[in-house]
Image 1 (cartoon, rainbow, N blue to C red):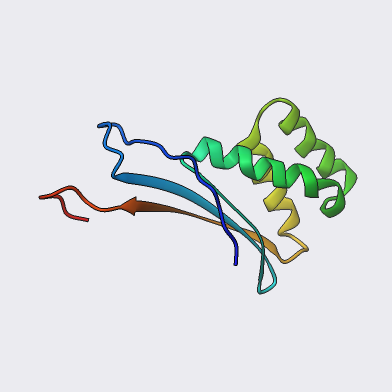
Image 2 (image 1 turned 180 degrees about the vertical axis):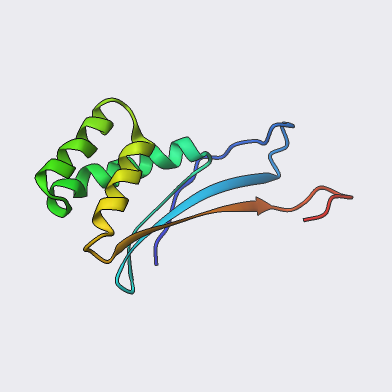
Length: 112
């Protein structure tokens, strides 16, 4: 079982009854090897970038790894994550699945 801590945030109206969580799950074969989450796409990209930084030199050829590291150094977390999973997915079974989940109950009179 995995536990993911996500910072508490409010929506644009200031209502803290709902929270959108951006979740990423990294699979290898039929196993989950990494889960992370954040309250924004950008935050999720930065969290995934840390995983990529730890894995890149072990999983990619040196030229591809260097390009991923250059993107990380420039602060392009989303670009580095995209390049890493595009490259690693060509010969490895590692894959990334992302989703958004809305937590909380609708306010009175609201649907879904």
